[in-house]
Image 1 (cartoon, rainbow, N blue to C red):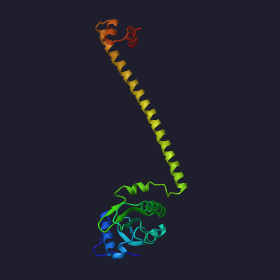
Image 2: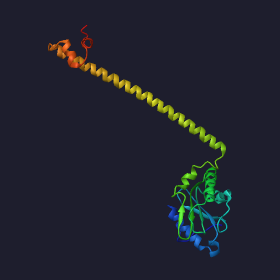
Image 3: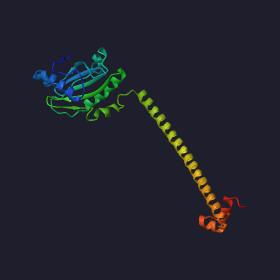
Length: 233
């Protein structure tokens, strides 16, 4: 059943408060008997967040509502919605998601991926308050779930992850080799610079008449090393 927006309702969704503001009024418009039943609505939007439709997908009992995934996305496909938000009420007043709430959200995320329609959030509402799966990070958790992902996709994901790990490992090894080469080059340059400086100092001391033995003591090396540096022998 298509839900008509009133002149007081926003046409753009900028956040969960906008969703609740609209859906709270929709819920309160129902008669008292229907308010005591669980409703499941779907809000369809374009990529910019403009509301294309609000559809009452199912009306259940006071504690549950049956959902057929393809019925949830039927209107979304017909009206070219690229993003959707699921909304349902808890007549009990509790805002705690049930395992069934989590499970159907998990399943609908996967159906949406197949249809290239993003299920961006699921709200549980009461006449006085609401909870957002996205705001509580529950949506992020369910988006990582593999429960309803086809087996072949899981295998493909594992293989891609293995290739990614192998590639990262190879990159680390290359970095280690490169770093070792850079260190060796730096050490070689340091030694060459040190030897050059010693040669200059030795020659300067020799010119001043300082003996090889004394130069060796000053530099902390052997006399043979002194002679080798300046090619005295």
